[in-house]
Length: 442
Image (cartoon, rainbow, N blue to C red; front, side, top):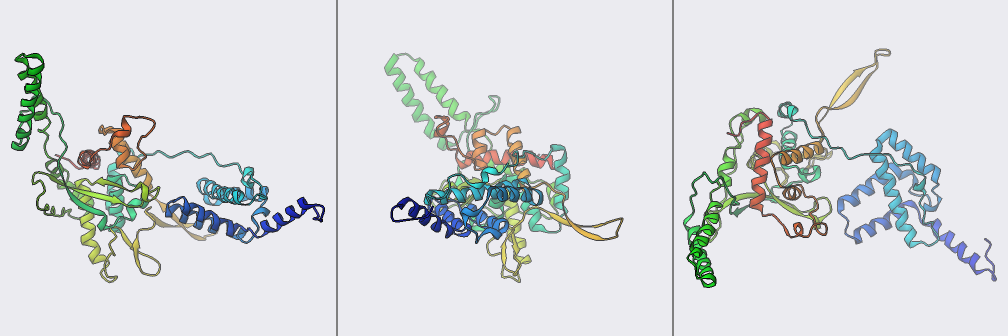
């Protein structure tokens, strides 16, 4: 519309069109990144968007955002689906849609309907493929045979912790701390004779006396003494479970040393600080400061004994493997980048190069072959093992850093399991997996 002194609407439309010409895809992405930072999106989410849009949409960066047409956006999705796969194609075009929507909120002359409306997104389903139990032993044998000891231990670490790939790859030694914790107490079979600690008896006796006095005051009957005795019996029963340390000692029998290819020597337990309870067990606790969801989703989980041994072995071997680089720089699973600098493992998948010869032309081509399940399949395996050993679903959510219930279940919203309680679950899962690896836990 041609602007005239008597046509202010035309002038406004022209000004709006000129302003939109200055909004390129690159500047729109910058604005969207600032919006993500403002709402405290995780650095990983921001880095993923910046990298993937640069890689797959970089040839559009200098074009005006409003100039992107529906048909070319749909064609780009089809090309990415063929060349990069359905997951990448969907993700990149969803990122473009988010960038457009942020720009549309800021520029009233930009259509509120993004060109991605023309895209038929690929139908994808979340893959749930734990390793079959009949295949776990052969998986362990293939992992033990890997030439790279860092990658070998990373895969075992993923199996025994159920962590997401990036959370595992970026673990640093400083993220593992040792904390005194009292082992959880549980009811045991009534056929086992209870042995109660003296300090626990000192707690039970006054409680029994107070219960007896209150009951007697209400009823005046001698039955109050029997009520107090039952209270004392219940508390005593809960003190009879074997300590977590004794249970953990059975999880590293000799066969696992042959399976993994080198001895596992657990790190000596640290000295408990003065004034702490000497009867408490010492738990190894892993802190993940910036997992999926960012720092606000930071979490701490206890580590099973076998995982502690893996970490200690990496501490010992890394010092030799990376001696020329001045050490592992604190990374449990280090590697070298293209410039020879120490960083964490970037790609957890184990791939090997396979030569293939075309029978017709004799041409030789190299192909990447993956012969081990992806890291997320190990997470599926961990979760399935937890279910089969009877781990409480709420405890499993904590161990895997899944969102805990809030509004959906008022009662469960109050529950936050202790580290000592979770440690028992972690050990049970580890023992189950060790047995399927062909290692006896007796």
